[in-house]
Length: 337
Image 1 (cartoon, rainbow, N blue to C red):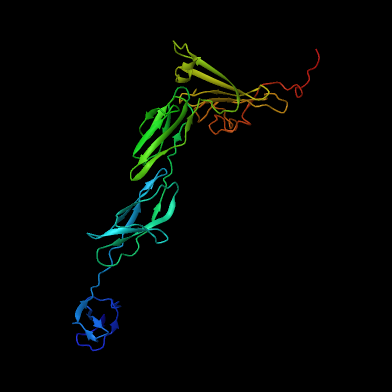
Image 2 (cartoon, helix red, strand yellow):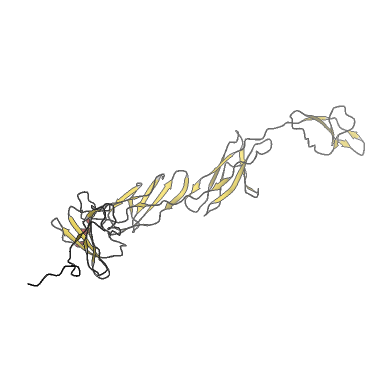
């Protein structure tokens, strides 16, 4: 095959079966003729006109996040009518041809820059590479809220916002709620399973433990419940009684059996704990009496800062005290008779 730049050119510019032009314009004309090297004869020249097709639009690539292990769905957008996409790996290997979506194999961990796409059309070259699609694993929900039931009151558990559905489960894996928050005064472990719009799979929180009132408290104490209503015949009923029905006092002791603190659970008019603290001197004697005060807590727990609590009714509990014993070592001697 001989290639000419004009119809009358006597010497061909190229002699090969194909022609590569480096003119980035449309309409450049070339002429081709077959040539018989044995006879030296050429065929009639035929015009060949170049057409320069613009690159297709670079696609925009996105990936649906996942909660759990599984395949990710990648989607490309931006191709003109009749166009499609080829998908490539970081090594530029073709993953899938002629598809607007690409579904990955099962993936169990996040992967950055997993794949990219190019737009392809029936005529012309593929587009430039689109943005990378990264695979993102969504974090599981985190349950927050009160962890102990006190005097029959419910604790409110919160799974957080932004989810499409909620499914609360108790220790027996029984469904107990389907809203963002869940309230209960039943002790046990609770977890929530969630879904999210445009996120594949589901996710389950860690178990959240709702404990009894003094669960986990490492102190010596004596619990006293004074029931204020009739027909309470079963001890199992007592934890569910509100403060109006149960006057509860908890006395705490040190390792020698000495009283350290007495807490009246929600004993104030505002249902805050009333605290009476005790302290001992170097001779193990209760040399000082402290005034009771209203704590900011409502759980009946031992107050480690009872002698420093700013809620105390006295400004300085270590000095505003009243002596309640006689110190014979300092008492003046009395004359006989």
